[in-house]
Every structure is written in C-alpha cells, then in structure tokens.
Image (cartoon, rainbow, N blue to C red; front, side):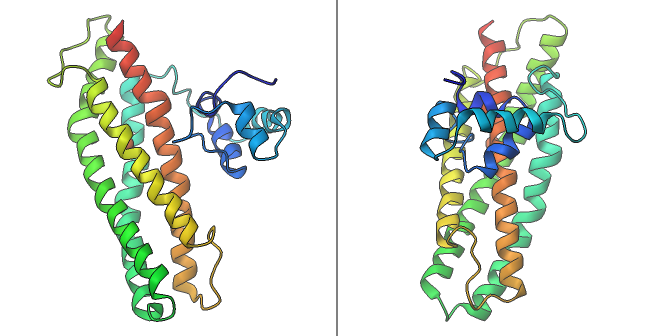
Length: 236
Ligand SMILES: [Fe+2]
Ligand SMILES: [Fe+2]
C-alpha cells in the first residue's frame, strides 16, 4: 500500500497534485472520499507511480500558496477572485457559443445538442445562484471566522445555527454541478469533435473542457480545504 489517504487528501497537497490527478481521470472532487490507492488501481494505474508524478509536479512552476495554513479569509477571497470571476466571464460566453452551434448545426444532431443546451443552461443558472449564496452569505461569515482565529477571539455566532448547515447545502449543489459536467462530457464523447465540427464547435468543446477543469479545482478548494477548515474552527 502507498498511502491510506483519500483522493481529496492527496489533492490537497498541491495544485500539481490536482493537475496530475485530472490527467489520470481520478475524481478528487466529488468522488474525493475514495481511497487513493483503490482509485488508482481501479483505473489500471500503479499508485506508486502516480504518487511519484505528484511529487515531481510539486517541484515545478511558481511556488503556490499553502491553502491549508494560509489565513482562511485569503482563501475565500482567492476563490472569489479567480474561480468565481472565471465563471462569471465564461458561462455567458459559452452560452452564446452554444446558441450559435445550435442555430447552425441543430438539425444535424438535435437530440444531443438540445440535451447539451438544457444541461448547460441548468448548470449555468445553478452556478450563478450558488455563487451569489457563497459571496453574499457564506464567504463573509468564513472571513469573519478567519479574522476571529487570527485575533484569538471566539467564533462569532452565525444566524443559521452552525456553519455546517449552509456548507452542506453548498456541497449538495457541488454534486449536482459535477453531475452536469459528467453528463456534458458523456454527450460530447469525452470532448471528441464530431465530423461536422466547425471552429465554433471546436471553441465550444475547448471552453467546456476548460470550464470542467476549473470547476473541479474550484470545488476541490471549497470541499476539501475551505469548508473543513471553517467547520474545524467552529468546533474548537
Ligand atoms: Fe465557489
Ligand atoms: Fe461552491
């Protein structure tokens, strides 16, 4: 056995670990509670060699921040400024691209394209609402927790009983977003371009795949680091 860690634990090591796991199709995000060793074996991979790749990935590129120890408010701000901003730009842009593809190629494969438009539309609406809840309600409380921790003060009371309540709701919505991404991946045959693909279809697939990768890192930072740290502070 290489490790007793779960996929989520290993993903929390570094962004290099996240990228490596992504490349191997290891679901550290919504399937993060699985054991790392078992998930690797299930994919026909040797856990030792994947772990080695992760260790090598850590040494490359600019050093990243250790979000396990950085002030909690900084992590909430980082998620907002990078991943939420990304979605606010990309979701409308992808929506437009999808509309164009539907108008031009809708008749070629109406079943797949209409279903894709429906799943994407629901994902977009849900994520836009989800981010409003995080930015308007949950993250400001998490930032207050972070300030209280830094000053050695008790955690301020929250109006929803425990911080674990809104967090559980956010996690349920993450599962639903993960399901939508999985369905879009299946509908596009793992982002394999159809024979009729023009440059808009290419740009759509590329954008959807990048959205999937970004959303996986985003959900990972919340589910595996931000939320557990907030819950642990409240329990102290
Ligand atoms: Fe978020
Ligand atoms: Fe979220």
